Image 1 (cartoon, rainbow, N blue to C red):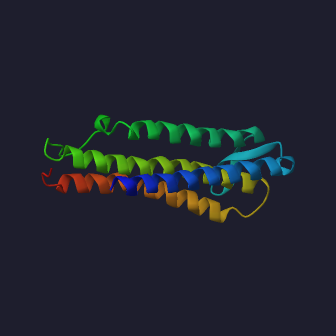
Image 2: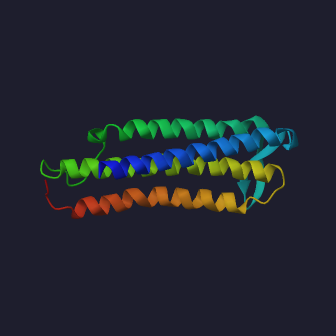
Image 3: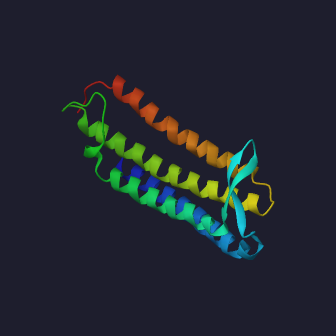
Amino acid sequence: MKDKGNLQGKVYFTVFFTVLALHMTFLLLAWDNIPDEIGIHYTNGEPDGYGSKYVLFLLPFISLITWYSLGFAKRRPEKLNYLNLTEQNKETQYVKGKKMMTHLQYLTALSIVFMNETFLKESMGENHTTQLMIAVILVGISVVIPFGYMIWSVRLKDSK
């Protein structure tokens, strides 16, 4: 099971940093075509808040901070809050908690990159529907995962 987790972590790591690198490359290549002021807040699909195009560097930075912070939490599974934690099932819960945090670490960080890609494409007048849908789906999955874990942990029988 340990090898599977390591493979999963390596795949997530590779996907996340590849997507981030591609996004940053696209951002830098498109920099001259981005207007100096871009929409950063929307109501009913129309921008009603604006900011400098330099804001486009903020979300990738936040994505890295999120990735690092959740990775730190993942390394200390005994510090997470658990439901139905007993001496008999704590190791099982820690393994599952670490796995949950791995999913959250990468899916949340990826969703932030796709949100920024949405802002970038929209600011250039390009179709951004795909990037927006990916970001929304990743956020949705990131919300559902802890609830699934809570249901699993409540139903967990004592095990060694």
